[in-house]
Amino acid sequence: MCSSRWSCFGGGVDVQLLWSLCVGKTTLVQKACEALVLSGVRVEGFCTEEVREGGRRVGFDVVTMTGERGHLSRIRDDAAASCGRREYMVGQYAVDLPSFEGLALPLFRNVGAVDGGSRKVFVVDEIGKMELFSQSFIRAVRQTLDSSACTILGTIPIPKGKPLGLAEEVRSRRDVKVFAVSKENRNAILQDILATLQECLKHTT
Image (cartoon, rainbow, N blue to C red; front, side, top):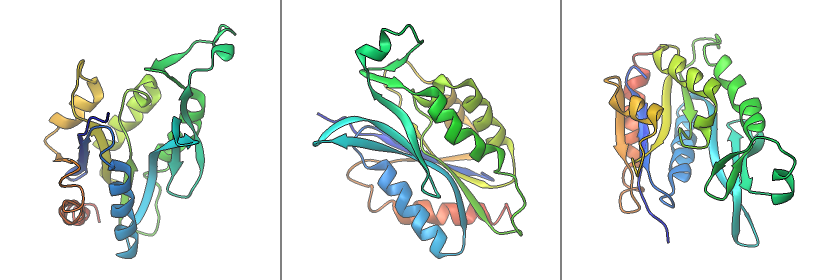
């Protein structure tokens, strides 16, 4: 069974999407990115996608806006676990921290690069339990939120159980606009998100 909730944030005001499992948050983010690109906005950053084999979810990948892909997590391999290597676990999934950091962190380093003055949205999908094992990722998100170099479109989970420190920090920022996304509103809310992002972009050009 899937629980369903999530949220979205964005800079100047940044936009954050609140989510739960199986709501289709990444599909919504991807649709927003496609519309932004068609309107002449430069989009950078990354999304998190499920990986399935034979109809069964086996993990998650990080996928950049340019199509580069790397492991975020996979179902725990007992043989690999016996090697004595430190593991970061979320449920049955072992987080591949080196893979995640190797792909995601360079994107943050380039976020302030001069690109001819074009309007830019930086995507962070998502700020969740797996990603927050990385202290470097936490620092990078904070620095990017404090920067005026771009508008951010990100996703954070709706609190369930113990709150996630950075997600709650983002949610409480006065310069962040949060949209709660559900299965019921995920199609209708796209235009509201795009309108907010376009308004944000007026303050970053």
